[in-house]
Image 1 (cartoon, rainbow, N blue to C red):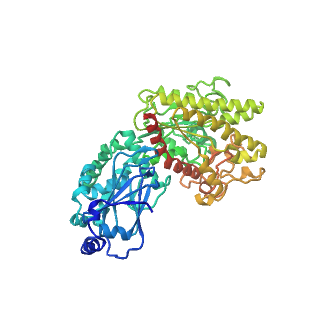
Image 2 (cartoon, rainbow, N blue to C red):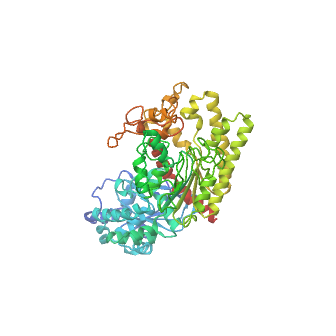
Image 3 (cartoon, one colour):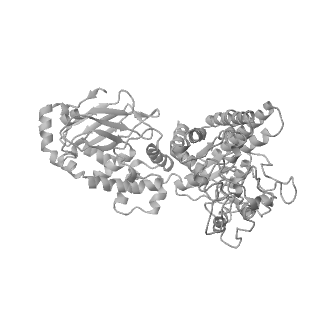
Length: 614
């Protein structure tokens, strides 16, 4: 048990006198339960647990009970009988001061409201907003004053369940504009248990990211809460506190949002599905039913799910390949066409996988020309295109920039016939090139920048199908050589690196926890059959698809309205299979990855911003 420090006002009353007084207040308290077993647990967090804080409870009888987190766990425990004896029945006002979060001193207090019943109370930025609104304190100085001398039985009686519910609703209305994934209606921020890194904790990270990226204070957000309570919170207010307003993506097929839709949908169905006379995004949506992404079409890839969690609908920046004229949708006026990723792309070199050159010649890779097949514009050139786009080339506040590439460099090197040492050196060089491109983005003012490492390529269906030795080699190249080199280089530049293998390993180890029924058959001869996408016979006839290793680019789910029977191996495979094809995830796996990233990015980006200021 942590040592207790009592203020003089609390010591002036004996236990008997305090209990007698509390019985008189029971009519306006939150409980008539006079049983004293149990304890009050108070946890303090800013997104990181606040270690070593001083927690002070204020009763409506004017007494205070102060506890110091000497164990530095982020939580203090108070016997309920002790709280009743000193403070009487609740509700109590709770204040936390001091302590450190991730080694950084916490300089501002947080407030909350606690019940005198046994259980948990949270003290966080979110409970602070609720407490200030529920008590009518206006701002932090107001609730400090109330805590110091104004909280009495009358004020306690006003903290009804209806008052607290209204305050939570107003806070929720504002915070959902910060990130749509925040939803206080699904749990009680004042008392719900949570732990570091879980979805509730992530909501605190979203608030911290908003404070860091918009230069707003908690009191500024409190002002918006007051407006929400009066139904005066507007779209203009949302823009003031929203940390992520736009998502910009660079990469390969794992991120490609439909660059090849025009020709892939034609190849998949045998008919032109993209109407060039229609509005481009409407035509893209209609054609995507048949194919165009490297997943179970028309399902979303991870960056589309992630962007949607910020209220942003990301679309491909360009439509290219398949002898089609190249079209830069961003330059044509599409303000959300900021996904530059292309299937087959490498970090900095051409040709990528599936590239057959332009119509002008097999070795010509002029990006303004019509490519015979996949255009595979490398990440370096994708960045060139964005930086050169009129009006959009400079990054701005509210931009989240994500980069995910490198697998195609490994595939090409692994098939090069070179020595293992030469292959490893080439892969390491590609990782350094990607780090250089990340540094280039940072120098161009991409302040919220995230680079994602490669998944374990040896555990994909294609990796397993290649045999144990080849699979082990792919694992080593992707994890030790590429990710190891990349992570080290990015750390030196204070750029956020995220390793996706924690969640992918969890999915493959306990697939049912994520709704999956089929992972990867460990028998090399059967591994490629454990994918959601079956052969697209129309595409195969034109020699686009491969019966032995179907590509997700031509894979689709059934769509009755479009008379598309789909190409899934079994009904619902898009939601129950981990992989769409030999190397690409199903749309459900993309969603799982996006949720994982979304729960971590706010904290990682905030940490990077704090480190940059040290």
